[in-house]
Image (cartoon, rainbow, N blue to C red):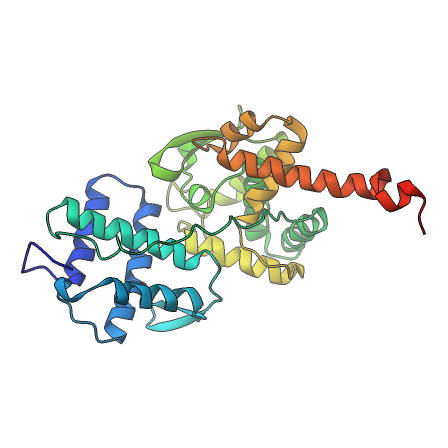
Length: 326
């Protein structure tokens, strides 16, 4: 790969790209996504003793990295200089491919590179993963854990976790949206919450009277501890972060005995499908979830139709039973 600026190396290219994301006013979640992705790329480059000179980097090395990242069983976590073991998904390598393509295209557009080493690589888009919501029994188990805490001496965390769980389900919030809600974003009287989603785009999300009651009970306890304007706080009164909420949900699943795969984002899938069952309108679902187009709403509609097809088969549509075969 040829570079125009002989003084810039791979590490500096990554730093410049991340600076540009901040300068362009990209959402904090966008910055964090690329920072983590490119940190793994730099880690691999260092582990393979790649030279820092950009003109020595080629498509073969990029392919090697994508092969590694798509089949590895761990992710490097620079913060604690260790490894967090995790199985790569079919879409993992594709995400890294898109991230590197954006990095090197940025370098070309900024006049730092003459061409991108990724341009020679053609990556087939993986199929989207199936939409897999949590079942009703799973949700009841989650809430039962919260109720147990409320009644057994952990009232603050129990009330907080119940309110947070209900808001996730009722409003279809993303993890980053939930973590960044401030008190001023909440309107209990009108049962609305303002969130900042992907691309720093603001949205208004409704929630039910039951969720409002749960939030109100939590707020009564919160005011004795809070030292900030974040809606969700720790027992010490500090803001509950994205990592903190994610860690809480992992513990909640374990305590509830819910062993099915999937992380917190499955709550958004659960919310979307339940909303669609009642609203029966994919355009309203798009607005509810704050998507830019109907692509994802169509996926939810397809998932719901699949559920209906299975139920129809169980309730009279079975060809074998219909034909009277045995």
